[in-house]
Length: 150
Image 1: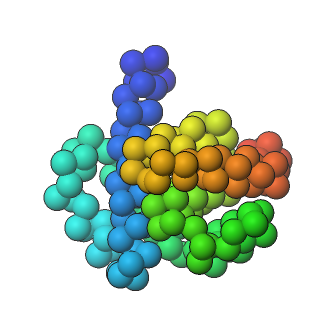
Image 2 (image 1 turned 60 degrees about the horizontal axis):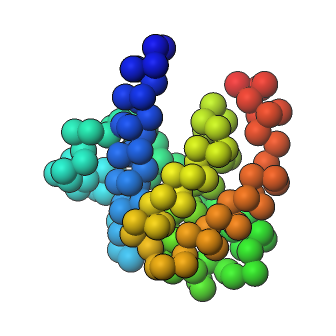
Image 3 (image 1 turned 30 degrees about the horizontal axis):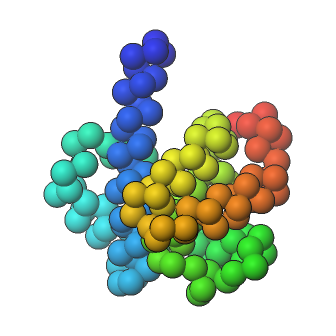
């Protein structure tokens, strides 16, 4: 893939993560199923700019693996998922899903995207907690080994 194509894919993935953050926040409040959430976000202004398959994967995967994701967050943080602000929690869930399942995406990209979204949508200092938790989780998963398997 050329540099132009890589940049376009990166931007589409950014938009997908933004939508996934919003969908996971909504799921946290409503517990709607992934298919319903994906359909709802087809009306969002960022939908045409997003990677639709990646967005659906992030939402469905984060919901399906939520127990495992939350357990990892709880075991890594002094705060439990019940104590974390819903926006920061949504960012953590999506990023943790990516850390576990999307080994082709560099860890630094996943973490910086989660932080960027928290700075935009979360509390003033919430991104710091997200950074600490994701940094610890990054060390927990052996992504190089997982990458060799895929």
